[in-house]
Length: 53
Length: 276
Image (cartoon, rainbow over all chains, first blue to last red; front, side, top):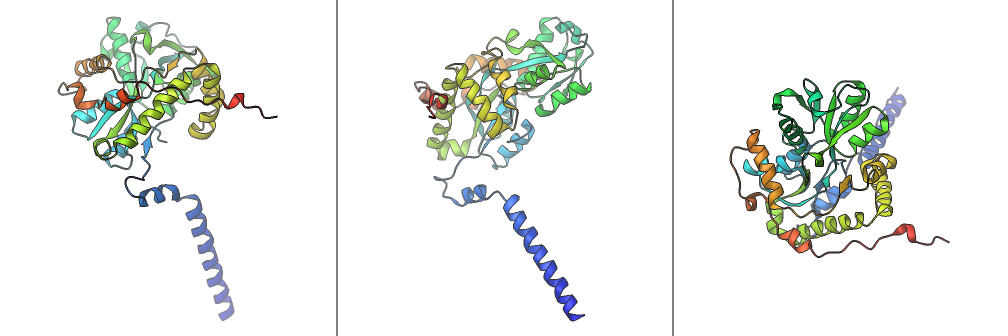
């Protein structure tokens, strides 16, 4: 019983690590976050546009 | 990349975006309401058209009476051009039902029969034409010879604290515009890389928008001209979109455009590179 509980806990932990890793990789805009950390004079301007010519 | 002008407006107000392309009347209305932005340059000239169903009964502006037409915003040049055309034919603004719709949705809505037509910037008129379900009733310049639509706006705090960054942005647009006006090869190349890497749109669609005919959308002159904005302001006052008239200097900062006046086109012709 104890071994089974340990397995479940490990499986859940592994699942959490994988899902969190995928989330950080796919959903977080790292370049935007890095840009926010720069000093104002070095920061890139964010320019909004819609796909029209 | 955004899907509509109202979202860009919110992003500018909240300072999530420091600059952006907005339809001119929206930029002017925001400024009149105290939003700290100024117009510094244009995005393009012309490039908007009124499109109706290919197999529909509308053959002229008077045929639009009672029809449902989509526009990108109440505060858009695309709406003003519809109203201008109606007026020229002696028709009141209420003759047509105008509905606001996100630009990427209009071609699908026309194909599905949800609307009778739309007034929108490229490449959506091209999308309807290439899809075989839409026909250009008239390009904007037919009723508005110096038509403009999208303008580049920048937040006041950025203009004040980072004028060099704004100048780099304006210079880049100016030089890109001059580059695009050099000929077909530049436009074909732009259609390819913008379609693939920026707009997620088929390059063939952008090729049509940029080349059929080649002056369908123009990228010079992009410097904000007082008389163009006076006309927009007149139309906005006439249709109740502005509560008070504004001086040109109140909503346009011309300094960046003036500095970009003598720039030359990018020297960029990758199609000439010998790959052997």
